[in-house]
Image (cartoon, rainbow, N blue to C red; front, side, top):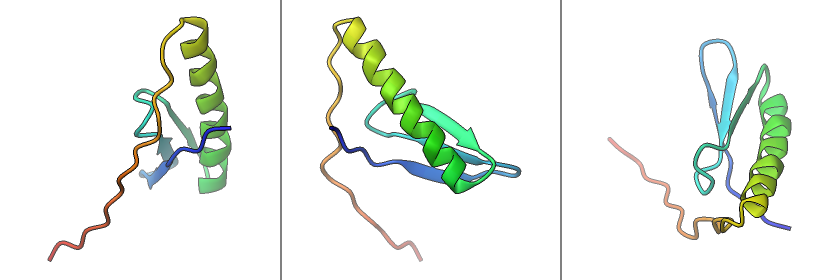
Length: 70
């Protein structure tokens, strides 16, 4: 089992989710929960594709920083 950081952002009319460690792995939904449900499926599909193509599955980014900008 792999664990990834998922970013969920609100746009004008929906929520957009993506995985920084898996470029191109994105999804959306009408609610944050729906976006998360969809990104879990997208992660699984991305991992399957990479495996089928004999490509490495990127590891999770280890460093996360939270900054405050004034």
